[in-house]
Length: 166
Image (cartoon, rainbow, N blue to C red; front, side, top):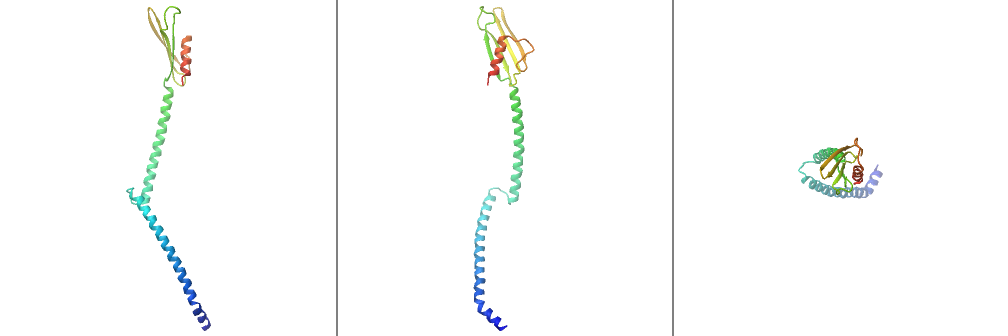
């Protein structure tokens, strides 16, 4: 037993030096972690000071609510844009005009046919016939570029001109 005590006493400076070395390494690691923690805390405080919110959980919840609200608004806007585009395609935006002399050599190009169409070639053709005695205007409805009424060559040309419009 005395041999054991002597052995421990001989090794005691090495054991103490090893323990001190471990404590010193742990102390350095703790200082490094403290510096990192202070830097992280400073960044966190800077982030939280500009929001007016006390903790990060409340901030994240608030941002989630805002994001959900924005997504709902985006879906509503998408629906409104789709409706507007549908209505826009139904508007008579394509117009073709054909002027002509309806009575041959007697007169000038005062007669006309105007086709007003939407994207589906629905709309109408207005024809104005002018002569010395008066002026007559006729309207013919169109569905798919065709009418239930007979169309003159000039009215057909006006329809083609309107369909070619971009």
